[in-house]
Image (cartoon, rainbow, N blue to C red; front, top):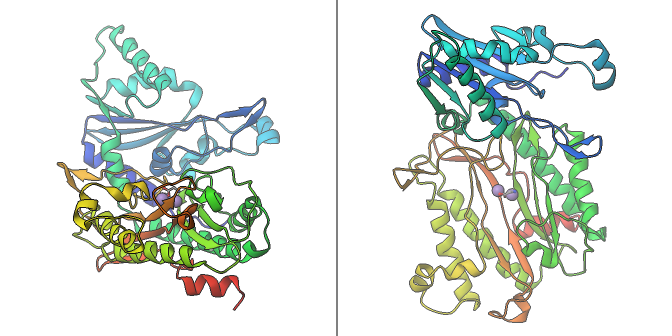
Length: 438
Ligand code: GLY
Ligand code: MN
Ligand code: MN
């Protein structure tokens, strides 16, 4: 089997870091994601809960991770399904209780069937129980049942507090280690290659589905499943922000917007490129594309330690608004248009988000009401766009139905930033050359 990029020692370090943050006298409970039925006996592809994955590296369902920060040291316990030779015939092998110790660095492992029997005693030893309060109704109820059990037991110690786990855990997840960056670099590299293959296939493709197939071919050949359902929008569909049907005809003269990324060891890439179906930008497409690109390059310049998360968005808003005035899509005084958020008719989302185990990754964006300062190890997307609705009466018909977004994945470094997705071409010249086979 291929060596994992994130080693068991790193998972152990994460557990230690979390327990250091929350202090002794605490117990942490994390539940694996449950399997979801798609239809009849068919399940959706299983994806582990990102918090659970971050703390354990364990990708099976029906498991609960228990971290105990006790006076005499910290312990990691995994409740999971035992190995079962009969089930292995149908579903393949499980890590089992032995694997939990040997491969996942747990101090103890137990059959998940023993959860009810053992959990109240583990909670009894703690003053604070940390878990994702309110996120899974059945787990909330289960924890309350264990609390009731303790109340009903003579002389039992009752934990004083049930505390929401997310804030501390998500603060850890926001800062990526070297190994996490390596995984994200690979996810970005593979996704960039997928975008290149889709661009090359576009001139002879007749339907969006064919380009989605090109993306999946690259993802799965590289053992990187998709990190979210891709958007492959030709023509007007490029203006639908969450378009995922990806099954319409591609017409001569269409722009095609592809927003697609994949996962490496659970870490996502999230890349958007927009290109002309036939390999030649029309005058209007080019004018708007160059404007979005100008704003994106300027926004990437804003990504460095000490800058605020919102600075990139502010720069994009300034450049996009000025550009729209210059091209005649907006009329008025620049400052007044920015204050009135006139650009929102054509640019209605923010310029990016944290990226990691989740595509829209965890972590606070503001601290004490102020936009958060960027620090080394954070990864975020930079993704301005322009979407001129096909029925927009505010602009001349020649601009209508043009949807453009350019999205890169950017790591904040000590010196500035690194664009992880830089392999995906984005200048007009590069895109046209690639698509025309030059
Ligand atoms: N692909 C989701 C996003 O760009 O936010
Ligand atoms: Mn994004
Ligand atoms: Mn995206």
